[in-house]
Length: 363
Image 1 (spheres, rainbow, N blue to C red):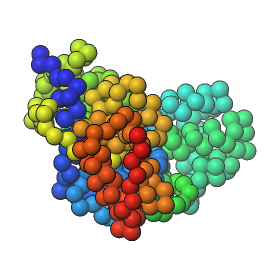
Image 2: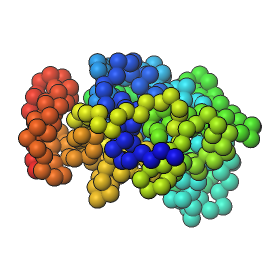
Image 3: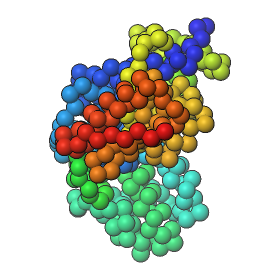
Image 4: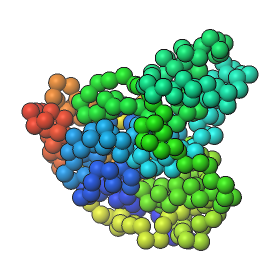
């Protein structure tokens, strides 16, 4: 079995993630290809798409949110993702059990004895009036009936697990600050989520495997589990194994992939790229060494914004008063500093509506 080293996997990841060459595709197609973008920080997906698309207009993504073509909802890993409406409707039921278990993992003691189906029905009844509510508002309306858990546990279970919800605009619009207002997905999109599939072969899981590999492969089943939060999807993988190709990584793990998916030459040059906080190009794997050193792994879960140099995490970045500040994790060569500065200027212009070109690089 062919062994793919870290550099080969890195170039495959960059290619699938649209980070090797900026893509000429509509924003909604990019969101679909990537299987969504992690979006608990509302402005971060704009930088994620700017880094991936050749002519990205942030107003287009705002329009997609306003129109309901893309939505903000709890999905993979019980984190807020920006996904297409079609994917939200198709995938939510497959994530239902995982969403419940993850909330219970945090609030099991508080929710002990609560009938979750009864709670879900009561929550739907409250939301049936069509009025958007914050998590706290919804929980308060049910607190008399379930006083023991407290509003936080009730609210999280209702909004992040029991009822398919979306976060309404203006939350998530370009350069807009707004609190979270939730509304049932069915009322916002005019269609109920797809019911759970009854087939034993897990057709929705099969679709998730294919979509994941198209955007993240080659990858191990543990990587798929890390991205989705689902338990490895073994039935789905078994059902489509005959259409997949397999490799090994340097640690001996079996890697799955789509046969026609691109796997660039490991020596393909990789441009500097600026990634937003919690980008799935890093978080979408259990073994992240293809893109980040183990010593720096904590950055990927701490909300640090990342700079890729030669395809790997080499610096963090922040922006304040129109100045993009890059902090290198180790000394950069003169050529790398120049490339980082060039992309930093482009980012500063994007974030400031062409008002600032200021970049500062600190070792």
